[in-house]
Structure formats: C-alpha cells, structure tokens
Amino acid sequence: MSAAGQQRPTLLIISFSRIVADARLLKQIRAFAEAYDVTTCGYGPQPDPRVEHIELDDAFSTSLKRLQGVALRARRHRFAYWVTPYARRARRLLRGRSFDAVLANDLDTAGVALSAFDPQRVHLDLHEFWPGRHDDVAEWRALRAPFFAWQLRTWASRVRSATTINEPLAERYAAEYGIRCGVVTNATEFQDLEPVPVEEPLRLVHSGASQVNRRLERMMRAVARSSNGATIDLYLVGTGTAYYGSLQDLAAELGERVRILPPVSHAELVSTLNRYDVGLPFLPPTTTNIRMSLPNKFFDYVQARLAILTGPTPPMRDLVEQYDLGVVTDDFEEESLTRAIDALDPEQVRVWKAHAQRAAEPLSAERQNDGWLAPIARIAEESRRSA
Image (cartoon, rainbow, N blue to C red; front, top):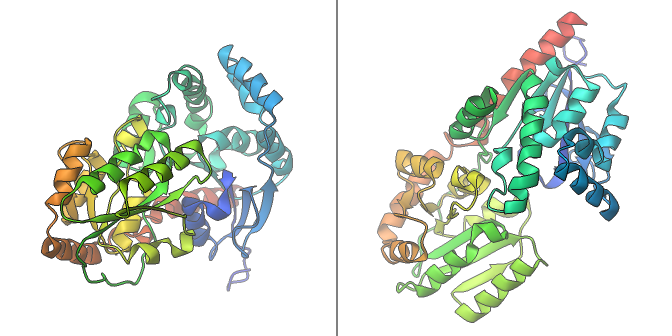
C-alpha cells in the first residue's frame, strides 16, 4: 500500500531469458520495484527479493525442435510459436492473472502477452531488430527471419506501445512494419568511479559473448601485431563452446599479451573494467543487428571511465564523436585496428578517460528509464481508471 493508503499499480515483466543474468531486465526491475507491485515471469530463480516470480522451464526437447522446424518450413508460423513448451507454460500460468500493465521483453513474448492480456495493457520492449539477428546465416534467413517478421505483423503491431535500443532501429521498425518505437538504450547504471591512472604498455579490454559472428579473433591478432606492447584481456561469456575453445587456442598461440579470462558477474563487471585503459566494442558488421548496434559493453566502458576504440558502427561512432571518448577506425579490418592501436598515445588516452568521466552521468541508464516509466505509467493509469 502507498502512503496515501491506495494499492500500488501492478506490473508483469515477462521474458524468455534467465532474468537474474539479464542486464536490461534487471534495470527494468530496479526502475519499477519502488512504485509498482512487480511480478516477473522467466527462466531461472527469483531475480529480486521485491518481486513475485513465476519461473519457467526453458527445456525444449529435440523432437519438439524438429516439429517446429517442419512448421517453419511449411510457413505454419502460429503452430511453430505455440509448439514451444515455455510459451505454452507461460500462457497457462498467466491466464486468469490480472495486472495493470505488462512489460513484454523481446518479440518472442508478444504472443503470450496478447493471449493472456488486453493488447492495450501491453508495452513491448523489442530490444534489437528481430529479422536481422542472424541474417548472416542462410538457413536462418530462410526460416527464422520470416517467422519473426510474421510475429511483428501479427502481434507487435497490436500492442499499446513499444521501445527499441536506438534511433536507427526505431526508424526501421516504423518504415518496415509500421511500429512506432520509443528508444531506451542499453545504458549502464551510473557508477561512482574515478578513472585509474594510465599505464604503459596500455591495457585494452573487451567483454561480451563469444559468438562466431563477432570475429573476436580480429581484435586478438590486431593487439598481438601492434608494436607498442599493448595488451588485451577478453572477459567472454560462452565457455565450453567450440568457438570459445578456438579463441583459447589462439590466445595461447599469440602469447602473453592476449588473455582469455572467465566472465565476471554483472555486479562486478564495471569495477573490473575500471582497472583498464581502453575498451574495445569492435564488432565487424556481420549481421544487421551488429551493423546497427549500440551494445551494453559500450556503456559499460563509459561507466568504467575507459577510452573507447571502436569500428565505424554508426550508433557507437556518433557517441564517440559527440563526447570525444576515443578513436574510430576507418573500417573493420584487422590492419586498421592494428594501426589505431599503434597510434594510441597514453596522454591522449588520459584525456579520453577524463571525457568518459564527464559523459558517465548523461550516458547512464537513469537518464534512459523514462522511456519505460512513462508508457507503463500511462498504461497503468488507463487500466485503473477503466477498472
């Protein structure tokens, strides 16, 4: 109950992800938990002691995956969606429940949300551009891209409001699907840190997923080939995969200036990054989403008060130039990155780290939260008024 004795508005946050390990979802929970009675629905344990949690099992048997594949090839998209056991379980557990507002995360929860609730109570956070997630893979383009395009036309177009992670993606959703999106970047919450003194040789760092389409070997080879002695540590999620193993083998081959380190928790990441000099969100444009990306790691590096060295990915390039945070390479080739590393001047890196200190507050998640708070507040107010 609120101080005025009125019941607080209720909010469901749903995601087909392990919420306790999902940075964007955790930001949503922290943004809403003080003013709303929040219920979460997703994989894994309760992500916050202040919320009720509906836990889903992410198991998906081989036989059902094969059946979904048959449905995708036959363009039976509705069947392909509901054959997933976690979608059916979420629908079953949520039917009969009532919430003033629903925050559905990622396109794949839209069908569940609209099956259980009035579309006018649903805000859809699309995150990235779904038809462009893995469009470097021919089979994915043939089967998954049409599946997601169908979900956008069938479900996403019906929700009360939507958000995505940057303006170029919002423009594309509007142009191709008529979906008007607000923008909430993947900004990191403000961290009260100071830049650590620059050391020589310079300490470079990269954090994130070890996915083949990110071409992480380019960064590793570029550092090893540089002539100024710079080092790089990579904190990578995805241990145990064949690609992760290949990166470990490459690091051993390249020598002690290149290290693959175990991932650190979300809570510890920024303070760990703070020990370095330059962050590398260097992602060759192998997919539509990567070509248009403005990833968590960019904002992690700002909060860690690092200089930034990135390729010419437009959303990252624009912020680097706007806040004078570092350097943008001419292209995404290994040779260009090596030249940029060789050209790094420790005194200039100190200046860029000082600029990151100034940019940390305006580029923080707290400045972005209104992109969720305002539409959810409108939905909740309308719902309670019509009740």
